[in-house]
Amino acid sequence: MQITVKVNGTAHSADVEPRLLLVHLLRERLRLTGTHIGCDTTSCGACTVLLDGMPIKSCTYLAVQADGHDVQTVEGLLENGQPSPIQAAFKQEHGLQCGFCTPGMMLAAKALLAENPDPSEEEVRWALSGNLCRCTGYVNIVRAVRAAAAATRDAEQAPVGQEVSA
Amino acid sequence: MLPPPFDYLAPRTLDEALDHLAEHGDEAKVLAGGQSLIPVLKLRFGAPQWLVDINRIGGLGEIAEDADHLRIGALVRHRDAERSRLLRERYPTMAAAAPQVSDPLVRNLGTVCGSLAHADPAGDWGAVMLALNAELVARSRAGSRVIAAGDFFEGPFTTALRPDELLVEVRVPRRPGAGGAYLKLERKVGDFATAAVAVRVSMTDGRIGDAGIGLTAVGPSNLKATEAEAALAGAEPSDEAFREAAELAARAASPSADTRGSADYKRNVVRVFTERGLRQSVAMAAAAGGPGG
Image (cartoon, rainbow over all chains, first blue to last red; front, side, top):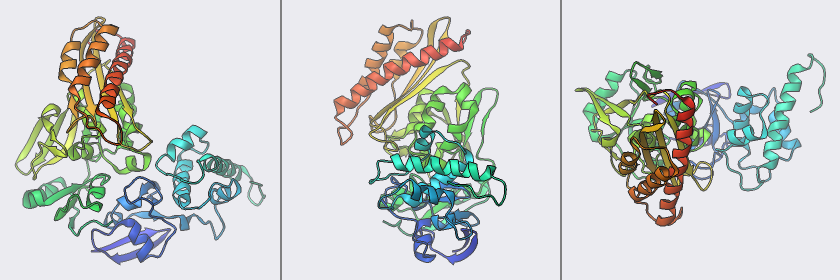
């Protein structure tokens, strides 16, 4: 059936089988391979995308359900070609090793910060508890999210045109 | 893993959905959150011919009270329950359970009613609704039917719902001042329960008026610990009463040994959690004060 999904701000129309998972639409039809498939059992969150701003597991959502909705993937985190504060913070704080869980972590973090601009460590851990990491032990991931939160708050408070160090 | 092929319907009204279910009956499955259904399809544990997606139907997403009941509509997500001030203030068993269902991503989509209709023996909401003596409202083209929670769960993934019926809401009797708890042991966040206990207690004049106890993941379906509940009715809220009820609840459980633990271990978790849950619920109800629980 025909569907139209806005992905990272661009509308895409496609003819899909109802059984096509959203993650497969993104990866295989749209070649946006930043969204990963980790477990196939709805456990790991590597496939996390934002659906109308809300983080979901795209491996457990049908493409046809996304008809008429907005999806953001990790590729959509760039801001005018520049890394977003979240991406910069993950780099700065070494919030990744193999990077497989990282897109999901960053998108879940984005959704958290949209609701809670100053989350505690506890709140970060809770919000990201649907995203599993096998490499890092989570410590630097939490640091990265809190650094991103601080950088975002700083950027919002800085007058226009003034450079703010992260 | 990929779901098997199916045809997909996305009705815009409840009547349309009921028409589809009447027509396709047991060849159809309802898609609400999909957080249980889609994994079933991916694992090929089921291959319905039709999926009836109810997400585009308005008016099903309400959490509201009327004179006698709290009503939870078919599209109320676990997340909505988790964030509900009404639940936090007046329905402590539900408020305790909501944040413990799976993980935040699943909670964004999965629904309370969907969980009940799916009837996984390890599902959390079933135990809660058994403890609360909730009623489930099933609609079909033929009309409406109210099913008591105690009559709803028939076995693993099997409920009293007919193939042409949609669970449109679950309703919980209002019990001002009731205390409640949901204690869940899981190996890691997002895992199914190793064992879990839902407790609800209403107090009258310093004694337990009546209590509800529901069990998760320790039987072929969610279980109601009816003997434990009977022992608590009218009882003095003493350590002795809690221990006795906990023992009865543990005996009501029929857990299977698996990677989450032995049967004895799970039974013991039920015992400990029932006692703890009763203590917490009584304290909460006593603090709420006033006659009538």
